Length: 157
Image 1: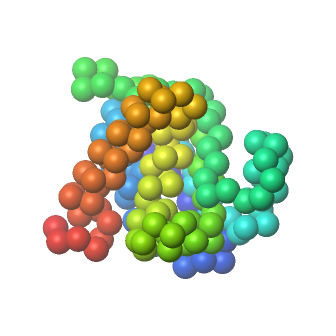
Image 2: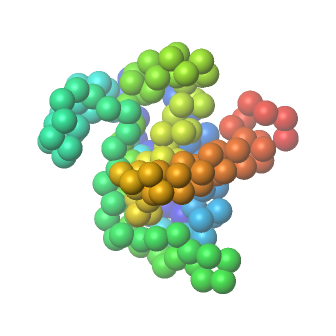
């Protein structure tokens, strides 16, 4: 899988962990190994600008997703085709604030936001209650599996 990560945020982030997470999630979602995705970590000002430009909403947000080829998850019987999934944009500073409020560390929040953004790239949404339930259940399942697998680097392997 081609997973590119660019950290322009100025924040120290465990970039390798985010790359492992995306690779893990894509494998669990039966996405072709030749699929491409990029992750950008940006500062608050950049995130605010993107949020206004693309969502027409004021202020910064935590994560934005920009799907490209409209790929969907595959299944054990049929892998999703190769293609360009799109871009995930994260704001570590907003994530840090949310992590404090939630009572966990910043990497836990960034893992959540990265998986959330990836699911958006794969067509998941949470506008309706049923969609929300499906997306958040899958998000929780993927994150728990990643941690249990030792992918976060902080748990025993």
